[in-house]
Image 1 (spheres, rainbow, N blue to C red):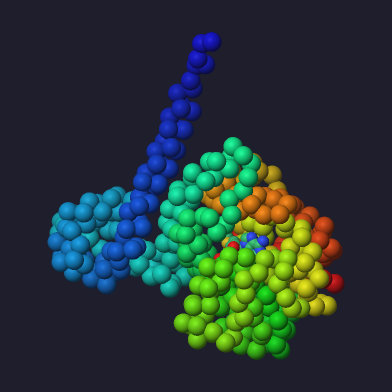
Image 2 (tube, rainbow, N blue to C red):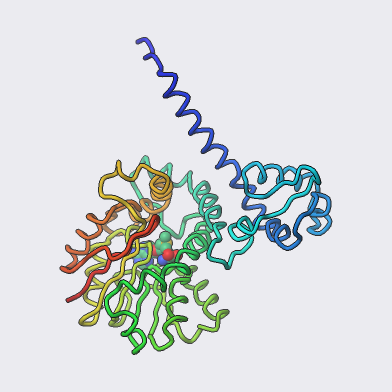
Length: 355
Ligand SMILES: C[S@@+](CC[C@H](N)C(=O)[O-])C[C@H]1O[C@@H](n2cnc3c(N)ncnc32)[C@H](O)[C@@H]1O
């Protein structure tokens, strides 16, 4: 069979897109090196420096540093002064790459990407068998990456714009309501809630024991050790009755989201709500074929779908399920009153009220 004739314009456009993605991906190991060796932090603290000055201060090899600096400057991630042959960070570059505690930090994304690459072999086998890959068998970089990746968004949005959309939440939390953060991972969202509402009773649960251990350590370090009750438990076995039961970026990872939502329905006190935070998505896949959709479908293929398939039922909603499928899950679990209460470019918040 003769090869079909190529549309050269379409070919060029596709190749350009591949080149953009290859170039963006090529920097992943450099970003991890820059993060782990503190190169971004040195640049942020030192101001404008030559590669030799940076090498002196950091005790790192000048030749490696110089190549790293050219690569990151080519990406627009560091700034180069060609007259002085020096490098620096703009305040914006420092905020995104050198300030892990700040709301603009995006370094966790490179942990997630690195973890995803390391998961390739296990997920490749799962493609053949249809089995899942248990979250605990993911590359450990994924665990810290997930926490770091979502943290800035929780810090920026959770208290300021997402939780205020939940009926009466502030009033009830200030009056001592009970809040359960299911699938809490390292518990960064749980800590924000405990800090914001000192009168509330706050619990975090996750099926993954190492994450719960890390959550306990972080809470202790933040002086919240006795304020948050963490337990290793899956979404169908935790104890207690709660006013709010939250699933922050985790319901779609669960094998049995309907079972988890039904269990939550039974664990909710009268007047309580489930709070679902999920990646923003549209109901039709083709409406997710954009920048965020590309990222989420990729993470979903390599992380969320394998995790869900490793558990009972294995529904594998995927990270771009969209509001209709998510609300169908909640309806099937018994929630009649569900709605999207907030949406931004990356996340949407759904409230499901018990009554
Ligand atoms: C993408 S991570 C999100 C973690 C955290 N909520 C955050 O936003 O950083 C998904 C989490 O769901 C947890 N998880 C998956 N299945 C679970 C289940 N059936 N019950 C409880 N937790 C589960 C995983 O262990 C993991 O910590």
